[in-house]
Image 1: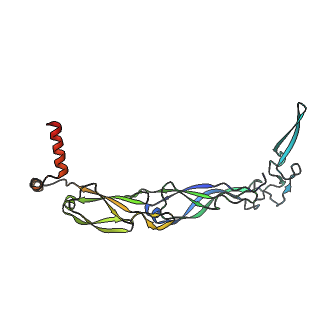
Image 2: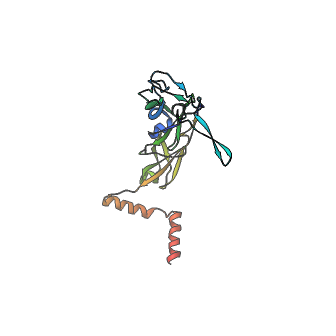
Image 3: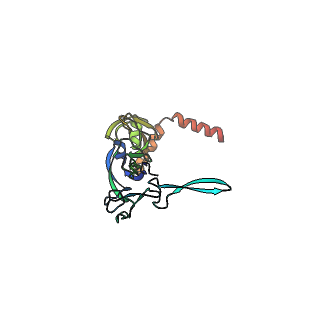
Amino acid sequence: QNAPRRGENVAARLELTFEEAAFGCEKVVAAPRIENCPACHGSGSADGVVETCSQCHGTGQVRSVQNFMGMQMQSTTTCPACGGRGKIIKNPCPTCKGKGKVRRNRRVKVKIPAGVDAGQSVRVRGEGCVGANGGPNGDLLVEILIRRHPIFSRQGTDVLCEVPVTFTQAALGARIQVPTLDGKVDFDLPEGTQTGREFILREKGIPEVGNSRRRGNERFTVVVETPTHLTGEQKELLRKLDGTIEVSPKRKKFIDNLRNLFG
C-alpha cells in the first residue's frame, strides 16, 4: 500500500458554441480534485513529525499465523495501528484531519482543438487528483457539449444547412448568398432547381482534429418557398403560366402511373 500510486482522473463538462468547436478555443474549466493539504504539505501532521509504524514497520500490513487442524495458516491484513498507511501521526493537521489531502475546486485552462465534436473528451494531463506516495497526478477529462446553432448542423466534418429560395429564383436561376463558417459566399443557382436538391461547397466544413489544414465540405439543401397570400391578379398570372409550361418527365410519369392504377 506504500507503493507510488497514480491519482484518480477527474471529469468536467464544457459547452461550446458551434464555431468554438469548429475552430478551437481556450477555455477555463472548474473541476473538483484531491490535492495535498497546503497547511501540512501533504504529510498529515501539524508539526511535520511522522513516525514509522512500529507494529508493521512501515509496510501497512501485518501477518498472523493460526493453527487449523494441525496446520499453520498465514494471513495478511491491514495494520490496525496505522490503518494501512505505515505511518503514525501523533499530532494530526487540523485542516485535513491527518489525511494529508483536501478536496478543492480548481480552475484550469483547457485548449480545445479545432474540429472537436459533441461527446468527445479533451484530456488535460496532470490536472486530476494528486498521486499517493509520490505517484503522478491523474488527468482532467473534459466532455464536450455543443450548443445548437440556428443555421448549421454537422455530420462528421461536413457542415449542413438549408437555404430558402423563392419560386422565381429556383425556376430562372439566380446568384444567391449562402452562409458558411467563414462568412457569406456567392453561389450561382442553376435554373430549374428543385426543392431538396443538395449542393456542395468544397472545404467549407469542419477542420479535422489534429490537422486543421484539412477541412470537410459544406452541404446545403435548397428549399423552394411556395408563395402565400397571393392577390387575385397574381393567382391568375400563375394559372396562365402553368398552362404554358410543358409537363415535366417526373410529373408525366406520375400521371401515367395514376391512369394505369385507377384506369
